[in-house]
Image (cartoon, rainbow, N blue to C red; front, side):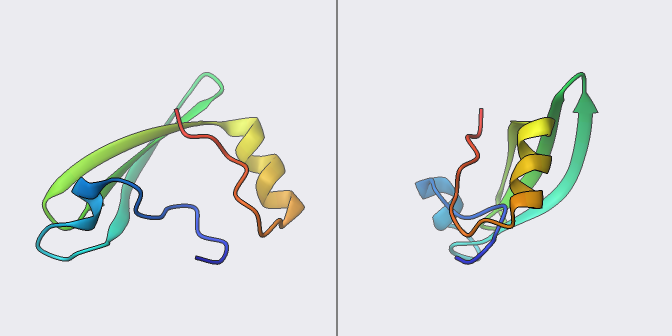
Length: 71
């Protein structure tokens, strides 16, 4: 999965019109959290939130490991 920010994790993201597909549709910054809205399997919409400082730190570290925790 490389350095992907998003990947399929739930059955409803893996099964649909296009299996195993997630794609970003928008984002909102509120306080210190980034809320990301995304489409899944071409038939659902989901949202995740991330601590913005954690996201920036992770991007800067250029790590190949997944350390971010979605809320």
